[in-house]
Image 1 (spheres, rainbow, N blue to C red):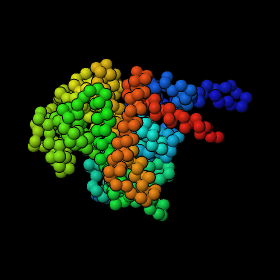
Image 2: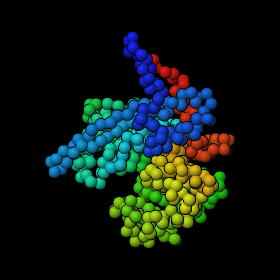
Image 3: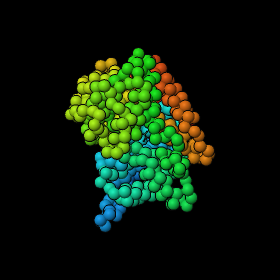
Image 4: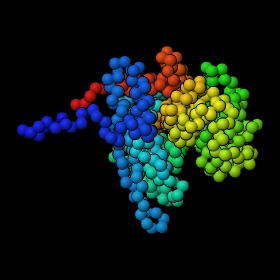
Length: 438
Ligand code: GLU
C-alpha cells in the first residue's frame, strides 16, 4: 500500500503480487517452471513458506550486444544473464546462442539449473545466459566479437565465485575460451575458473564434452533395471545428435542397443537394423547434420514420433513432446537430454500411458557435474585423469537417481516431481539457514 501524506490510501499491488512478466498464465517456459514448483509445494512441509523465493529470479540482466559485421555495418543483438538462485553457492549454467532465445526462456533455464544443481548436490545455485542470434549466419570473426562483447557486458555479474557460465545450445569450447580470455583481460589476470567447458589446454576437464551424454546413459541404465528393460536388446531413437544425443547414442550402441532413428534440424534418418553410430558421428562432424547419411533411409520428420522403440532420447530443444505427439510415442522410457523437451500436457499423457520420463533436471545433470569437477580442478591447479572423472560422475549420478527414485516411490509421484521435491528442499533449507538480509 502506498500513502500520499494527508490523502487517501491508494490501492497499490500487494508486495507479493507477481510482476506481469512472471505471470503463471503466460505459459512460456517460465510458466511451465512455475507449474512444476506449484506441484511440489504440498510436499515441502515447513519449507513451503520460503517457496516464493523459487518463483522469481534473484537477478536478471539484459544487455545490448553491438558488433561490427564483416561488411562494416553495425548490428545489435540482445543478450541475457539470469541468476535464478544463489542460496547454495555461485550461479552456474550455460550460455546459448539461438535466434529464438527470450528472457522467459533464459529465466526458466536458469531455474532448472537451480533444481538440477541441487538434485545432484553440487554446491551451486542456478543461472543461465543467452544471446538472441543465429550463430550460423555469423562469420567466425563476428561470432568472436559477439561473444567477447556479451562477456564484457555480463562481466559485472559473473566471476569464478559469483556465476560461472558453460556451453549450451550452439556454444562450444572455443566460445568458452573467448569468454575466459575476455573476462581475464578485463580483470588483468587469467581467471580460468570463470567458465567451464573450456579447451583442455586452457584448464578444461577431461570428460567434460561427453559428460552430459554419459549422464543420460547412466540414468537410463539405472532406470532400465527398475522397469525390467534390457539395454542390450533395446531399440533407441534420438532427437538431436550433438554433444548430448550423439554421445548418449554412442554409449547406448556400445552397450548393445540398436539406435534405429535419429532426427535433427536437417531431417530424420531410420535404419531397422540399427545405425552405425560411429560412422554417423563422423558424418555429423563433417556435415553438421544427420541428413544425407548414406547408411540409412530418410523418413518424414513427423514419422519420427511413430518409430517403434523402447527408449526415446529428446536431446535438442524445448517443447518437442507435446499433446499432439505424446499419444503416439512407442517408447517405454523417455530420457530428457535436452532442457524442457516435454510440455506439461505431454508429461501427463506419458504418465497416463505408463511411459517413464527421466526428467532433464536429473537426466542431463552429468554436464554440470563435470563442470563442477573442472572448476574444482582449476582452483587447485591439479588435474585428474579421465577414469577418475568418469567414475566420480557415474557415482554421483547413480546416487542422486537412487534417492530420487525412492522419493518417487514414497510419495507416488513422477520422477520430475520427485526431483523437484529433493532439490527444492535442499535449496529452501539453505535459504532458511541463511535467513533474510537485512
Ligand atoms: N548447459 C548445460 C546444462 O544445461 C551445462 C551447464 C554447466 O555446465 O554449467 O546443464
